[in-house]
Length: 568
Image (cartoon, rainbow, N blue to C red; front, side, top):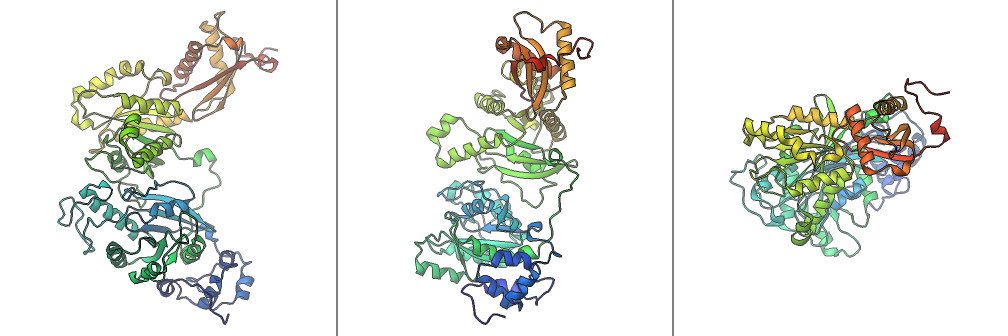
């Protein structure tokens, strides 16, 4: 056992709770191989040796053993909490390795809880970013009423939050903390401690979860007096980090190591699954503000949220800020739903919105490129007109991105049966001129509040997703070309002569057609080919990419005669 004391050790709270097991214990640091790989160059390893009564030589001798699961095969959950504007979202983005959450110096930007996968050195875990804890809610009692008419509700001006959302946000944070293995309580070293920090520190202690105190924004200009005051929270020795400059993460890896070693192994992916089968369908919920997107997502995911609280909803427009990814199971099929913020007119956002509104709209538009099918919500409660100019702008953005499209008339519980029938009867005429590029777009009437029509919606969305992943062999496409020549619709002298067709990509389906006189392939001729493909294979609701090139000798030899046999 080393006879000297290292310069750093985890807090006494972490020691007494998680490091009481003896050397070689099943609950202690049994994975010496990964422990040595993490702490081989850090003096913190010496503290681990002293605590577990193991020498550095024992760790080196046992580091070659592979009878234990590695850290990469295990996972646990970490919740990030704290008052507004202390850098929780910046730390979350640093841990997940990408800009997933919106970051702004304005408090109250984050509202819904967001989950991501963090890879910190050899440790992999689930991390959840939560909303900033506001003093608009009284937290003196642990089991309090979170309803809108609760007596502790009072208005707050932080981030223009509606008062009833503060109780819902605290309820979601409490649910996340209780379902997590460890909590990172983040404070701001620059501004120092506030009465709000002390209040929430007492609240976090009552929840009974292992809590690590993280003092953020320690970028070299920290006041020593302010740093010393952080100890007064009673959460043990703080860990000084700077999420913006990526400082202090190695010490955080060491502190999270015990939780990785005692966590349950991850479920391995079966080797028999192909990459196509392992890829889950991804659907984005788009629409104007206050169209009922978050309510619809909550109704679809209420039975399979997999440990995540419901999204914040309310009558006020613009509640959702960050795009939220939720993995749900609907009728035995796993899929990913992406709830986005309401999209307003671009000119109005730039002229009247602030930087947060601009970043929110940009994040929602980026999500269109990451999904397979977009569900565009139309508000049925607007009596003047079902589809407005902004709805068409959202639909055009989906078409330009090359994604599948499903139109959803939400709040159909406000419509009568005659009105629903009239909408379904006139939808083809309404969309014929505006959405002719992707064929007959499916339209479904639903109610996110009551759950009416959700089964039909998911069946339609999955069907459009299957069309989006459509694949056809060259033989099938050649039969389609033969039929076109047989009926004589593609044999005009002014049109190219079709020789060979093959599919080169899916999602969306992309075809390459070899022909003679390819320079004569006009826009109406390509539109004719797209419509013919849709009629033949039932590919409505998705974009089709057709590329025409001049046929060479190799393609000429593949030409199929009318009988379906290759010419010799």
